[in-house]
Image (cartoon, one colour):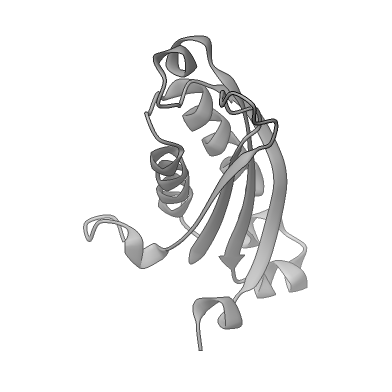
Length: 132
């Protein structure tokens, strides 16, 4: 069985932030809007019984981590930004697995009016050995 079959999930949708990740220099200078959806695999048993915040993963931490990375870091590739988001959330503790769907809402591609989404899934054991 996989991690997803052993743990409960918290879904967080449409975290929007303005950031400076992109291959083109203009993207890293002018910036653009990004949207992030997260799925966090964690055990919600204790919180379900206790009704106490300290017994669950406080998803406000995940939202803050996503916004901090998007707004404060500049990468050439959205793949790198998605990876940093995933690892940052895993470093918070309490999450066994995270799925990050990172969407570039208006990519600067002539003649293209759609969106680009990168989706990755990382496990706690994805962290460097000194952190996991």
